[in-house]
Amino acid sequence: MAYQIDPQKCETCGACVEACPNDAIKIKGLTAVIDANLCIDCGSCETTCNSGAISAS
Ligand code: SF4
Image (cartoon, rainbow, N blue to C red; front, side, top):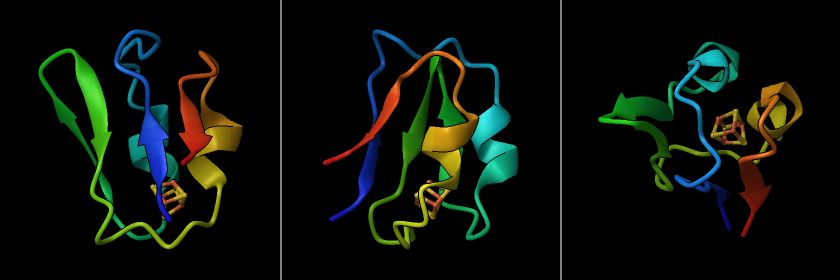
């Protein structure tokens, strides 16, 4: 399992990038993207996202 970001909701604010303790999130174009291989399912990004764009898959 890994968290995912809905590109339709992502506002590219970068808050999740800062919140991730494992450096799993990068900004790519107009959306943030989570590397499933680095995500440790901590949930920090979901809590930080003001757009409701991040959810567990
Ligand atoms: Fe990073 Fe935690 Fe979000 Fe996974 S759940 S992308 S480890 S902040």
